[in-house]
Image (cartoon, rainbow, N blue to C red; front, side):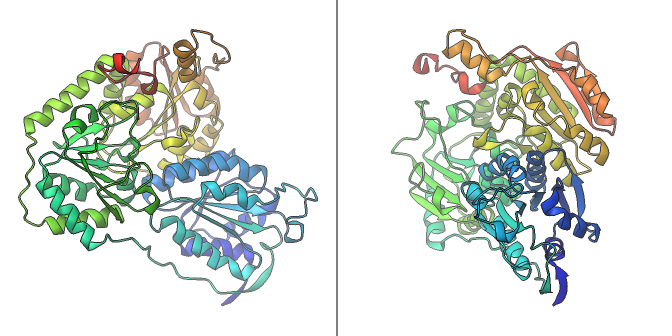
Length: 550
């Protein structure tokens, strides 16, 4: 036990929990915390230009490293700015901790108009966090930080938010710091493992459906071993990309809005093992699950097991522990699978042909980008047509190498999220694909990238439109276009003004050499790519289903 301020207790507790980076924007209620960071050289402070991007950077750092990403903001407008990023982390099952300042304790709940006051700020974050709390005394801070870190990492990873009032940070008390503890991962019920293994061993057409829970559990090796033991093809969701290398013979690709290999595999499958996925199959597809098909689910979140469909066997478990227990139970069992290698290769080929017919330009760009990147390069796919199609067309070869905003579909998240990913992985290539509308949300963080040496390459696909909304107007509103045209700067010149490398293409075919140069430049880079407006996957009927969907 030692005498220290609440701010020192906060920062030293974060350090003891293994935090190495804090993304923050200063303000009066958290200046004591900044001063305490001055005394803590083991934590790198990265000052951003907007609280929302502090949260996005923490998210990109967290999802690509598996460690907790921490953002520090002032209360009121700062916390509200960060809320969109916290919501994205919640949707993406990402281990993010938001540390928010607060007004002084005596003013809480009084509605006196204190600087940055929000009455019941905790309630703002309850729907988008797994756990949140506010301290009332300096000596409570270590336990609050410890609890937050445990909540963020135990079971299904999701964000937490903690608040420290203005007057508690400088207050002095005798405080006992806590030691870091290991996280608790849920093992599956052995009886359910046995039942699931028996069903899978007897399956003639087993199929594995891998979601974001596989990403967070780092099951690349184990998932491949299970697929090989069962001779089962693997489909991933966009969140689960990289859970198995997409050049593995049993990987058949990604499912997204009715597109992808599910069209050629799901109708034939008799037993489907879903791991860490919400199983949110698009209801418009006529080839979705049937009553005669057996579904087995493994999920760290018990609420997900029965939310969208009820499985024959549902196991609450960490994905890695669940897979390992299944492998042990299967032992030397002989698989009854009738999938043939040439059949799966044919499915991959048909899927590629379908996608090339629907989105030839998008496929070409995905192939160009992939050819220039290392196998372990990190791709952050924004909310833009190229990135949407990239869920389906961009092969991911290593785990924790592909990021989406999941169901939150947060416009503008990709560039700052990529910055956080690069901070956590300085020796890996990091590329963000983003539209012109999305890039304008956070282009000011180019100054942060230059100042901090965060050498991300950002591909800005410029069509002068809010493209998906424009396509919606053309398709559903009979061409009645309003409010979807954009006036943009020259993005390459904008990058140069900030001190980054700017490259403006006159033709999309210049992308490969430009990306090669940007990756070799060892500085933040923006490549502006001219684009026509394209129809996104969720506005495009799956191949051969136009008559069904209309």
